[in-house]
Length: 173
Image (cartoon, rainbow, N blue to C red):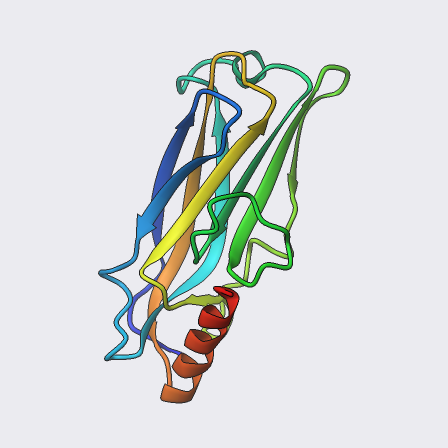
């Protein structure tokens, strides 16, 4: 199983979006993942923070009513929003802005919180996390999504590391 090498820490990336096209960002994990030492990143939870075009503007005004914002974190670059059964998917969220009811946020993936135990979490052996966000319809002026990944570095047994690496490779197909 996994042996913790660090306490939990947070990796953060913000994406600014101005149109309805998919927008991408990455979180570099090259300093955290080491194949030779069977070192992996253990993701404990992923938080999504939605803000307007600037930090202190109204989100509903900047995105516009009748819009849906999707955001996903994966350990392979798919170049688009993917279905929930994609094995590379680490976390996902949706924000819906309805002209009648206001703002609604829904986590759309089995949990984005994997627990805090030493065996709980999603192990990532790839050297990047990929973030994709898209607004269904063009936002009025734009919005920002901040992704906060709470993680720790662990060493895996040779069998566990190989199983995760094979699964990740198989997910690439």
